[in-house]
Image 1 (cartoon, helix red, strand yellow):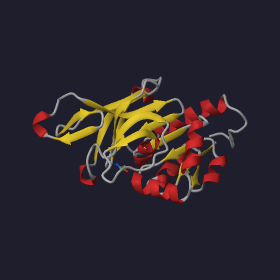
Image 2 (image 1 turned 180 degrees about the vertical axis):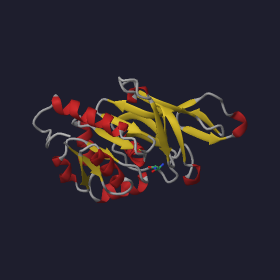
Image 3 (image 1 turned 90 degrees about the horizontal axis):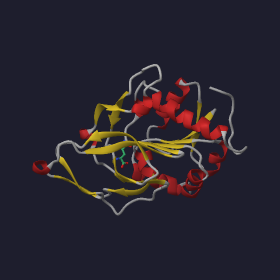
Image 4 (image 1 turned 90 degrees about the vertical axis):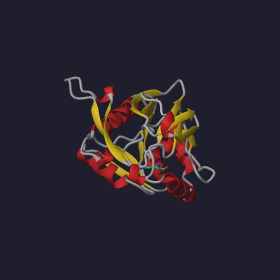
Length: 236
Ligand code: GLN
């Protein structure tokens, strides 16, 4: 099995290494025509405005949108999730182009800037194994976005408490105002909608490959029930 990894910017090497640990080949994607050679795609974390500029330069947006529309599995991590969202808020300079397809609103730097990056255990029931393996996953949040709103088709896989110095004013506004914070409020940090998977944190920066396995399972399920356009090269 081969998986495409968008390799314009960000942590694409780390995703390829994680796939390799599972015996799967990750192929770097930089040009629209390269998408024809893969049946699933990971869009890594990095910096979404830079990635969008590079994607525009390489004329990748139409091909990426087509890939999503064809129902091929796509996983966006962090900046990659921002790419997949139908709507992004929290941009300073008038927004950026998005691939879209994932019916949600993300706030770009919800959890703060680089120095507010953190690690935390999150609970992900979908990752628990049948043998009673843990559902806890160590989330690496780097300038992490959050999902503020989801459409009816979107499955929430994990959420996380809103930091105590933040307030959700509406689906599109977040302001820092310590005295008004609402304890217990949560934001969404992992979602699935059909062929699309999104995580606001970076599983590729941990030794735990359960998210990659989860995505590969999605990819195989689509591959099994799909047409000859899905190229499966060997097995894991
Ligand atoms: N918040 C960043 C952005 O807007 C994404 C951070 C990341 O991918 N680690 O691009």
